[in-house]
Amino acid sequence: MAMNFKIFETKELADIFAADLLRKQIHNNPESILALDVNEDLSQVYEKFVGEVKNHPADLSEIQLYSVGRGGLGIFKNLDIPSSQLNEGGTADDLDDKGKKKVNVALLNLNSNKKVGFNNDNDELFKAKELFIYATGGDKEEVVRSLYDANLEGSSTLSNIKNHRMVTVVIDKDAAGRLDHDIVEYYS
Image (cartoon, rainbow, N blue to C red; front, side):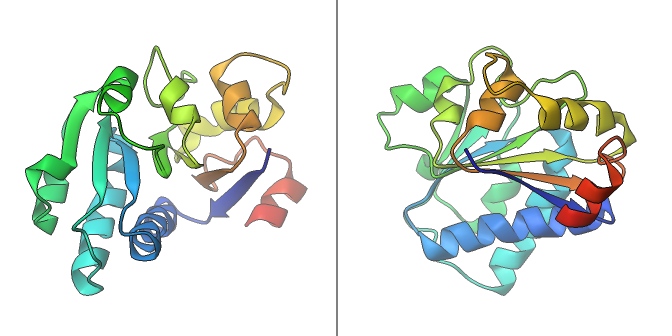
């Protein structure tokens, strides 16, 4: 288990950091399989990511992008990625049915109602090599605190996140509002 927090002063800084994480993943591993939550809260992250990749070209010939949830990966079509590499299935079964190797990175939005990624079945996402959890705004401060305090022995979604071998929680100061001051200082 390795849960780290990255706390940023503003949502925009958190967006830039998350976008850069995705760009670096693709740069370092052009065969990456990314599971991306198409939640509206992450739309600015993806816009910044597309802009970064256009400014700093990367080899996109082998990456695979999977949408998490219902929605689409339309923003990524701006990268001229072949449609065969954009998978809009929307469920954990879709990830499993493609017969692909393990997901390298999953970027998931943490909702204020403690839902993350797929609402019913997160098993395939929790097998991702690296998990990034994103939460911004004051309405997320309670769920961020719940994640921080989650029981390692539990079976809830938050416990599963906390038990993941490599998870980074990307939040802004508003979402960190219920964390102890010394914790916020340490991870800022």
